[in-house]
Length: 175
Figure 1 (tube, rainbow, N blue to C red):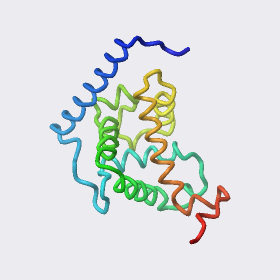
Figure 2: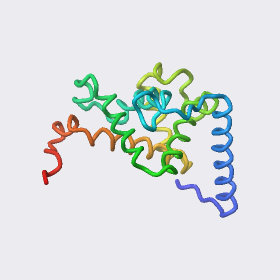
Figure 3: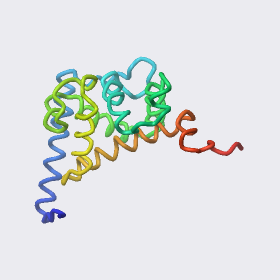
Figure 4: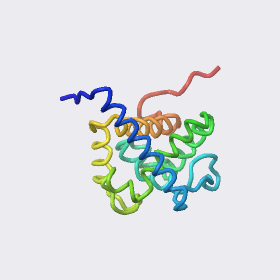
């Protein structure tokens, strides 16, 4: 059943979400959790982002044979995502980094995702439960976060030739 919000409630929710994200960003920056430096060999993604996205990738992509067969599939996907993010505006890069900070900071990760430990120790069931909770949330902000994670990882994965064979896609036409 859809939740009907009055204009006033919607403004309060928007203000609260903005305040929360700002507080998280400032807290992460002051605590040193949000390194502005990209990981070695990357242009945008940071070390903590790589750990998080590597943990999410198998759940988002699913049981794709190439993801399981190719030993460098996760790294190739993250490098493709990094190239894509580097080509995007600084505003989009900032939004993506704020989302990843929100998921990496324990203060916000635990209540928002239900994952208590480090991402690399999270079970596939925990990651799936977090993604389903965000996908089906009554809060638009969480649904948008789910869509962003899903689209970014899917876009990066299916841009790689190793993902094409199993789907029957021959690749882009040669010009």
